[in-house]
Length: 138
Length: 349
Image 1 (tube, each protein chain N blue to C red):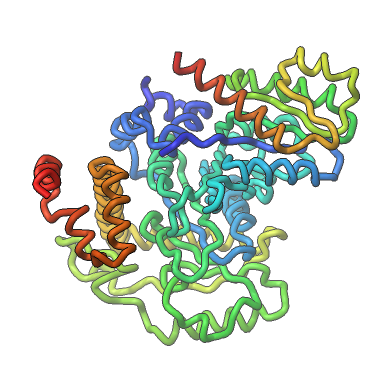
Image 2 (cartoon, chains in turn orange, brown):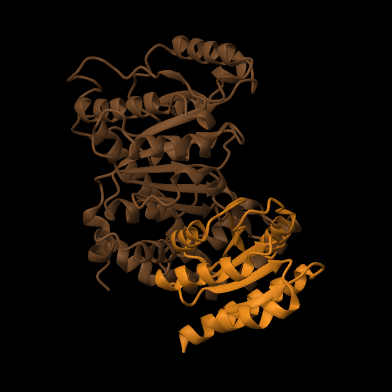
């Protein structure tokens, strides 16, 4: 059986707008990936727990509430505490330009704003996961 | 790696990683299954199936919740859930969305939820669901709930995997003729009418009860189509009383009826053990699972033994009507399977 890419798409925080998350989930599905979607208003603990149980390769966080500088570091901290330090984290939503460097320094691989092409998201994720698998083999 | 130790110590990362290995059918996954298999066979395996949208995920959540919060002062039981959703036949991808309905269980250390895609299997569960259940069983969960994909009428494979099968219906899905058709209703040990507060719930309950009464008790040589265990005397000889399939009402999103449903699930498990049917089903389950494994392995071996060019070549002849399907079969899958012989014959041709 071939190795499938498994991705958690989560919406932490309190905003109730998940169209972006669903568009990305659907695009990843059409790219042949298995996407676990957990629904609205997840706490960082719920996101990390789902990532652990589902043993995902990547976690995509959709945040439009402006709380990303609180939610993202907490989720990354929990993922690491669970032993999932190799999981790729990407963020989408309304993220001001000035926050991106700090998010990346925390361990976020990519940040996607409104209007990002889903093709780019798919290519980025495939590239990162392939590179990681390559590393594991060596 | 000591998988048994890791699983039994409740290492959730180890459980999750082994599930991935098993799902991808890796050599490591197979080796681990060899190691853990003697430690399986302890959990109560419960299947939940039904049409899309009847509320399977919500109901599974509430059964698990009832296990975790027993009203009768008993100790809470640990629960693992495998929730299966379909793989797209076009892209190979999947959206696994059952966790959306399972929020009530988040943060509970005694619950482990895993989503699985069917990856091309058609029986309502994934090919590796059997093996995933073994992993969770060895990890010591008291109950393992397997939720199938939204099943139509003939996705009955779940019954060959689990000990207690719950078939979920909802009001307004069909008339009394739907209820007497063969298929999914026949595998039920417990029938649940979910969304019982919707109009039409009474008629649905009545139609299901009438369907059950038409059949009398489901006795016979083959229960659920399983071969019976050779040494076991006729069914229910010890008790003389069969299991009467109950029709229960639930409103999963209001948590109504879940405690009663769990009591019925427990009663069914007790019945299985006392009547000797548990052993009988286990025997059937093992035969079927092994049979499937043989089929899978033979097909894989055959694919490796015949080159794609050769298959293509014969398929072309089939397409041009130069060969019939059976003639093509004789060429590509000769009666004697040993590979050397096949290759010799290929050279002679």
